[in-house]
Length: 259
Image (tube, rainbow, N blue to C red):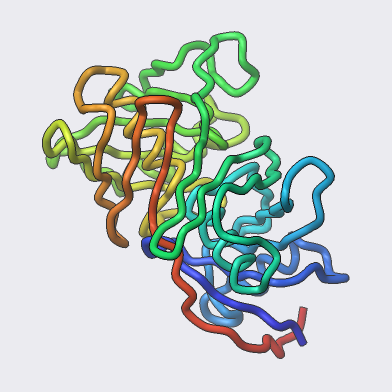
């Protein structure tokens, strides 16, 4: 039996558990199954850290590890606050993508994601941060994890392209694909196909990456509201990239299924 809590950040849902004796990849696939498990986009596990206040282990629903997850990290912080593992205020969280600075308050949690990697010599960026595939321009960057940002209008059938682009041979590690509608200079709408999770109601780092690229192209201001299927997020790109949004506890319980 495994005790768990479930949280969501604008509809992106996660299972939080203590460290287990089971393989994390197998555990994620089992717990995240929406028919035979609890159902979620991923799982997170807290661990002690020698270089930050705490360490987050994140596993996608398909069992693959991810270096970072923006919505997930906010939920992770809320879980740790609820269990006395962290205190409100400035915090540092160790992730596979590095140490993330966090400001945790009652109503919202802000993550300082730093500056994205656009360097052409970076191992994360493919050739150039502008890639043409399927007749579309993909702006690729690394912001906690690998993202492609595509600016579209309502004539594009994004649902026929999400998985095709996410697992395109051009991206050997697969990539998160963010389709962006610009509503005005302070508002964008983002729909994301995540590697390892598929279509999700929200992607925090994807929203942040989209806001950064649209601002870089002078299509939006440095402070924008991002509308996702699960709600709204706030991104400020004035100094680095700061993502702010909710983290809500949904349920707690005991998983009694087989692992």
